[in-house]
Length: 362
Image (cartoon, rainbow, N blue to C red; front, side):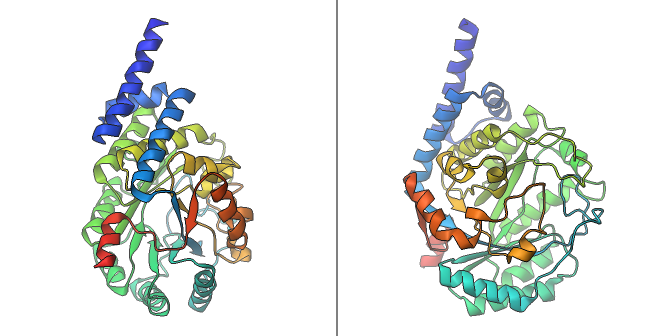
């Protein structure tokens, strides 16, 4: 019993240290992960809410998600859109359809559009830059976020010059050995990390992030992810549970634990108080109260889906993905009421990281 009390006291001390210094070692993060329980998670969540409030108050930002292509040339072992899954009904949204969706989103109050797709070689720089530049011309007060995977530094530069403001590229795991176990040999951990560095260097509001509970994940893997975000300091960080897809090599693997995701979110918020942290769709797929619990763990971003219903069901990264209900743009007023019920407020704004908000005001 005395040993348990010592361990609990040590973990509480580590939380206090993180709250004060915004720094822990990999080993210290590992200690928190191993010893996480309800009391520790509740303490971390309270600290996370305080940290978020100190920067953003009770604001929660919305992003309009447009899943414009489910084609992908990669073969990641965890993803339902992988090239080898021949059962997927592939699609690409016509550019005019994308602009129409943005228009509907704009009328609803969205001021950020997230164009997400697989690594689709059809979208070379010319095609993608035309789409980005047109959106910026039609909606000049809006931010455009891209999430289309690994590209060359030259490609990222072209997209930035076309008007793209933000870019999401989750590292998925910050452990090189683990990365090799969940990706095919053609994909490189070093290249993924180089892409993130290039995005930051080019001036994108850069998003990273990781899955929790992937096959072969160890406590050290999760601790390395937390440490990487702390050190890299992305402007945005997406954290969600691993959820298997029936047509992947990991079809029979168990899903990640929601409690581990929420605890990780809280630790990231404490380490990086000004980070933009979404309550992810994957979290809500496993937890029907994922939006509320995510916000109460430190999240301050929600991404309602603007993708047309017919295509929305085809963007199946994992089994049983939430694709309608309160996560669809059709339920925006219900979403606002839900967020208000826990003491927060959805705001219709670009919702930039403070570093970029200051630049936008100049």
